[in-house]
Length: 409
Ligand code: DI6
Ligand code: FE
Image 1: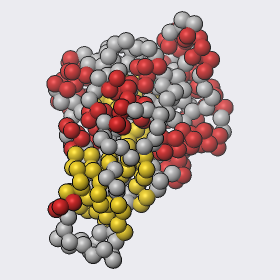
Image 2: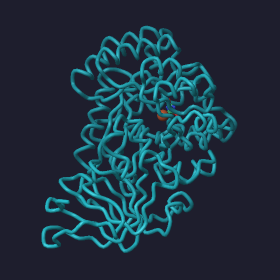
Image 3: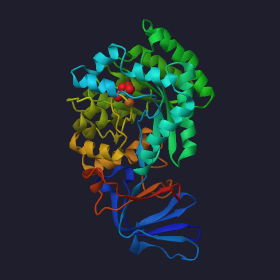
């Protein structure tokens, strides 16, 4: 085997390859991994390592630590103005998330703060959140718009998301979520707002190449099925991938609809039905589960984890980091909650923030696994077994982070 193009070689590491969402982490103990031009060039057992010239490459002694793919947070809303601590207090006095939303609080109050914020101040606050996730091993993230709710402010949010990609070595996928909530100026005419989303916002955003995908919040306090379908059609016309916030508070059948449109993923899913699970399986969709929102809203209905398993729907896990339902900017906490609240195995939870999260973003052939030809996005952890990444919380075991072959932490 020709190894002269290898540039970096990690020796004495244990690999959690997460190959194809495999059980038991796809583990290779006492292994090695070689990088060439930002990609994984070889991986396997130390004993199977081909001959190499140690003068041609940088050798890193992994000291028996564990190497995983760089983590992927595939559902966030980290660009926003203000915060909702006051609403948190109201909820603790008994008001529900839906009651607050109906009374003009909730998403709409973040819209007000986001519209008032300058692009620069949105950038500064989002940078802090992004950097927090990065320090925990995140190398790829999705950021949704949806707190501007008019053309100018949705564009402002997506520009901030685009700019963040230059600030840190993180791949950023941007999702246009214009259909997140009804802005006050359209309070009595949701169809007219959907006209604006489909006929003005989406074409302009596509033209400016500010989004990779389109999402809709299909819900009683969001948009109905017919409106959701209109947005899907507009996304299709502009060749943008489709995602959906579905069955979070009730079962409207948005997942089945999304399956008909070959959506990448359906997200939240506490109220997902068996027919929704089957539709996802048939369409090859990924289920994005958000234990932070489940926890923070004190939801008691669990997503249908067993059905998703039985029908082999890949389950991704993400923070849903946002000011209202999940003000939690920790991927490690989500790993823990995926196990404690949703009863995923630690291997399933880790697949949820690597292999399956990549699939939810349409990046399944590029990152999220340790596999030859994949991006060398790697996280090195000072742990004795991969389950520790889910088991403990609050101590950061990350010792190195590599993005496309370059060490960045
Ligand atoms: N579902 C959520 O959990 C977030 N958006 C959505 O559609 C919450 C957004 C917020 O409350 O600000
Ligand atoms: Fe969300």
